Length: 207
Image (cartoon, rainbow, N blue to C red; front, side):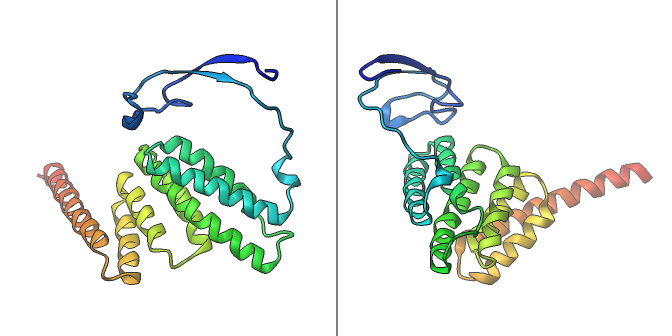
């Protein structure tokens, strides 16, 4: 496109639209294909992210994180994930950062990984949610949210004993958290159900 050119874009419901969640605030129903009319007002040449100084990476990473948080609050989880991925890319390596800069970078990256994980759970993608929780735990081994997210992902994948180990660790770190205890209660019920089913299967095999 050139300056002042107008274009009509058709956004598929999952990749660029509002997906299965829709957007109630904007009156957009779930699974809707969206058409957007755009006009190019200005053209500005931007730098590639790898050419940024480390201070610039901190600034841009924070901007992406805040954009991701906005989409997350609006339940636009795929759009949130894209912003979190953009933020995280600046802090994949410590190389070149001063210690205080790297500390600030990790403070930006950690909530991005956690909300990336939460968004993936909302989208029914537990494997991806677990991967992001693992990345968060590399930054902070004491992150209650990271253990909780991984427990939820393991539960969704029916890795019940792994889920229990994670939720017990989260409760150990934050014993007064009611949400964690409620999840453990539900998890224990599911474990009992699966144990009961296994016993019935084995009894039929050997009867």
